[in-house]
Image 1 (cartoon, one colour):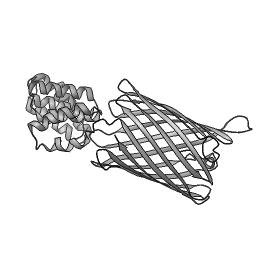
Image 2 (cartoon, one colour; image 1 turned 90 degrees about the vertical axis):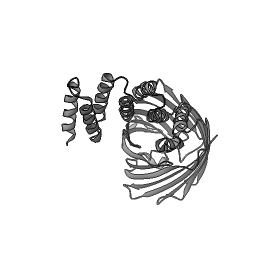
Image 3 (tube, helix red, strand yellow; image 1 turned 120 degrees about the vertical axis):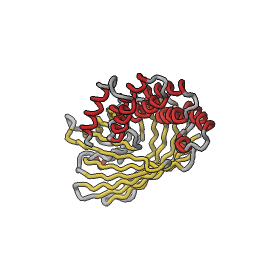
Image 4 (cartoon, one colour; image 1 turned 45 degrees about the horizontal axis):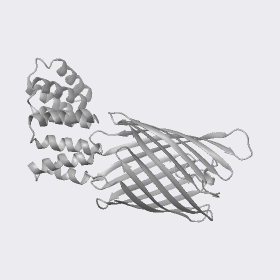
Length: 372
């Protein structure tokens, strides 16, 4: 059955719900779920719950569908109503714990999940969810190494060390970097902060300085904001100013992210427009437009993979003097995050860039983080 046909049946079922029997409505809801028509199925289960307020199963399904639609407050409300009817309903407890985990409310999620396991210690869904309930460890220390190999210059590398302090409302981070590129050794240090405003808006800012640097940016300032919607869409807007030895660059970068319902997959797309002003010249020289696409997927409980493609002259990393409007390039990126234990994670990344002037560049990086 086509999605359009299922949508039509769903709409007609909701309109005529007063006349249809509960079994028929639930059958239509299951058909809608099979066709990924989650909103239509949720409307049917809402009508069923209104007709039979004491039926906890309908509310559990309403909570599950609302969570798949990223409507977390509605999902929590449905699960709470189900638990008011059936306090020992393990499906409702595990469903609520899952939504709380997705919201990163880990302490509340742990409390609800332990209640479910006390009732049914062998429940597979509860056991599978348990490793994802990461209790807040506000301090993370990380160390990393990057290796750069290009056809137009010698081997470069970068080592860094940093720490972050996180809470449910924001994050504060500091980082020290040691660069060796184009025969130049540079020390840089930076700070960044992220703050959540309400439930769906995030703002961020950062600054990194490396006095005396010539090959890479000696000052790098950034700021941005994000807004999420219940359907999984996130709109981003970012700005960077980079100052190198003989020029400065302003980069504006709007972008979108989308988180798929009921799947551990999300994608990103962004466009970057930069304006370069070289020392001793007049108006800034524009025409440096780039775009970026990234795909992310959790392929196993402890593993997340990242794949990406970029087109343009910006490397989407720390801008270097060789990347200011002198070529176009195709860049392929890949990487992964592996949770080694509840405290320790490993990050890996690789990028290959082919430039229009014939040059090529390969970058490999590895990082280890430990939560305390």
